[in-house]
Every structure is written in C-alpha cells, then in structure tokens.
Image (cartoon, rainbow, N blue to C red; front, side):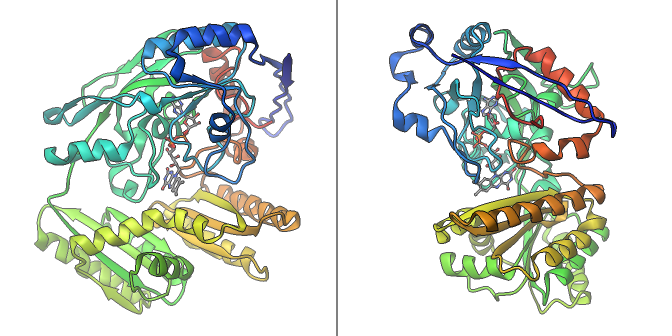
Length: 483
Ligand SMILES: Cc1cc2nc3c(=O)[nH]c(=O)nc-3n(C[C@H](O)[C@H](O)[C@H](O)COP(=O)(O)OP(=O)(O)OC[C@H]3O[C@@H](n4cnc5c(N)ncnc54)[C@H](O)[C@@H]3O)c2cc1C
C-alpha cells in the first residue's frame, strides 16, 4: 500500500506552494523478513506494546505508531537498514529516550523506528584533551557519572534522561546553558549515516577549526531529518573549582524579570539563572519538602576560581535584587541544599504531569533577546488574565527562554483550542520581539506552523538541503517543514 502527503510553504511574503508528493510504502512480509535478517532476532519487534511505547514522546501531541522497531548496535547495521529503507521508500525515525516535548520522535508516517537504547557505549574518554567518544544511545547522566573521577563533565543538561543522539538531534540545552552553552557547542566530531546508506565523518578533534563548511552545525538540531547519528566526539568541561548559589523571592514575576535583566546587564555571568512562578515553588515544596517561600523565585548559581571572587559577585547580585524589590535573598547555599533545589527544578516537569493526571498539558517554549524578557512576561500576563487557565511559569531566564505549562482538562476541546490560540499569539509576539518559536525543544510537530514567519525565504534553502541529503524524504517525515 502507498501513502501520500503534501508539503506547502510560503516564502518572501508571496505564496509559494511546493508540492512534495512523497510516497511511502507500508512494511510488507518481504520487507519484514529482509529487515529481520539484518539484525539479531531479539532486536526487531512489531509487538503491540513495543509499537505503543514508540508512538508518543512526552508531549501532548497525539500518538502515531511505527510499523516496527529495530534496536541497532553497529553503525554498519544502521547504514544497511537506511540503504534498504531508502530503496523501498520506508520512513525511518530515530529514537533516543522519547523525552521530546514537541512530538519530534513521533513516527508520523509509520515505517521503522531505530531505537538507540542498546547502542550506548562510552567508547573512550581522553580526559587530558577534554573529550569523549560516544555512541548515540549514551544517556548524558551516565556519561557524567562515568566522568566523575576525572573532574570533567558534559554540561548540556535537559533534565530528562536524554540520550546524546537525541540531544544532538534536538540541540538540547538546560539550566546551565547560559554559562556553558548548548549541545551544539559540545560536538567536535560527528558520524552520521545518510539516507543512501553512506556513513560520513565530520569535524576534527582540535578544539578549534575554520576548515570548510560547518556540517556539524547543520546536523545538530536537524531532528533526525538529514541523517542518523551513529557516533560523536563530544567536548567536556572542567567541574568548577568553586560555586556559590542563592535564592531570591520577589513580589511579582515582573519584578523578578527586571532583576534577571539587571543581573545579565551587570555582567555577573551566572552559571544558572532560573525564574519560577509561585505555583512551581508550591509544588516543589510539596513534592520535595524544600520549605521555600511561595513567591516568584530566582535560583541563581555562579561558578569561579575562588570563594572571595564569588562572594563579591553574590553581594552585587543581592544589591540588584534588593533594588528590584526582592523580599528575601538567601545567599551561600551549601552543596547539598543547592543540589536538592536543582534536582527539584529538574523534576518539576514530571511533578506537574504527575499532579495533573486529569489534564492535557501544553508546554510553550520560546526565547527572546534579554532586553525583551519583561515584554514577554507582560504578554503572558495579559493573555492569561481573565481566563481560568491553570499555568506553571518556568524559565531559563538568563537565556530569555520562557516555558509556560498550561493545563487543560482532558477531553475539553474548547479549552484546548483557546490554549492553542493563546500560545500562537505568544509565539507571534516572541517573533515580533526578535526571538524564536523554540529556545530548546525543537520544531517537531508543534512548531512547524511558525517556520515561515521565523525563517522567511531561508526556509526554501532548508528544504533544498533536506532534498540533497534525503531526496526521498524517508528521514523523520512530517517534521520541521510546515504542512
Ligand atoms: C521533564 C522534561 C524536561 C525537559 N527539559 C528540557 C530542557 O530543559 N532543555 C531541553 O533542551 N530539553 C528538555 N526536554 C526535552 C528533551 O529531554 C530533549 O529534547 C532531549 O534532547 C531529547 O532526547 P531523547 O534522547 O529523549 O530524544 P528523543 O526524544 O527520543 O528524540 C529526539 C529527536 O532526536 C531524533 N533522534 C534520536 N536519536 C537519533 C539519532 N541517533 N540520530 C538522529 N536523530 C535521532 C528523534 O527522531 C527526534 O527527532 C525536557 C523533557 C522532559 C520530559
């Protein structure tokens, strides 16, 4: 059986329609027998529960099952599967931990999911070069555990148990991105299997290069639509010699937002600057017994060489917060208290889901230049005021990255439409302010409709690049480009 779908997009203000009549084949018995012969029998499954497990990520996007799942363990297997899938027009979607929040790994067109769970070896750690060679299924927390004794770590930290392959594909970041950067800043070499079955190596082990086009940056963040990551050399960072952390409470999100802006403008260079609404603090108190004041709260952390230097920075941060009307400023958190708070911060997304089992949750993720941060807060307040929507305000504030988790009673279609309209208007506002429709979760399914507004005529060139690497469109079809 052959399925078809159409891609349409608009560029340069004029409407340009591009019909991509991509045709895919459903898996038939011959395909299945062929694919099964490529891997050990226990690494191929078309079982109902396996298909269900690979039909949804952690977002609210509707699930869609693949037709089979393969767990590769060698790059050569991936290449062989891709070559066969390309020749037979079978969609291929990469799968790490399925922790995405925009439907990125949902196999929208069926076909095969390649789950990298078993291709998870840390191949080599070269601590003196600050580098590690990894397979795509390595979970970043496991890499950091392994690195403990070296005094090094892999800084991008999306909170969830994510794989390096999934993080590279989504260009993941997290609480300490403001200081350390995101995944794209940590990939030195990349090994990718292309749709035609060729494996290409990109990059160098040198810490800098100006040689040729930067293909690594092209693949990082491409959400598995250009090729499948089968290996990477990642850069590592030294664990900070000293750190200091503080909590500041404010009478309103607006005041806290101003303090964020002033801390950034003051050049205090925080390692983390997280802003949470009171509803988040209340939930974290309940779930993790933190005993914090239930108010808009900033968690901040600074890394440096000496405690004296850090004490001076904290003093300046306190002064800035006080000027913005902060109600209390608690400096000098010890390591265990800092860890407990950041663990709760990491767990917040899961806490929200767990505590609202009767709700469908829309997670908005936008980012703006820091000068526009207060305006985004105002826009959110205006949109939510007058509705009876329950929201959680969560922000990697130092990066101007705002998340708003909005709850909708399951089955309440009218409320869901209202929420989608609100999010659409907020994203449009973000773009107007010079920001982006997604700070870290990627385009996946949910943000495709903003691609034209954000990228204009360059979207056409993205489409051309996609056609070069994946002319048959078998790689994660239905993602990134608007339909
Ligand atoms: C509670 C919670 C908090 C989160 N917080 C953050 C956050 O702070 N910052 C952030 O950036 N993200 C966050 N996320 C989102 C998510 O964790 C990240 O996007 C993460 O990078 C996804 O990794 P994964 O291994 O789960 O990949 P998956 O979700 O399985 O896949 C992600 C994408 O990568 C593709 N893919 C997977 N493996 C490969 C491969 N080998 N080659 C090519 N493509 C591949 C998939 O097809 C998909 O498009 C959060 C998620 C949750 C549930």
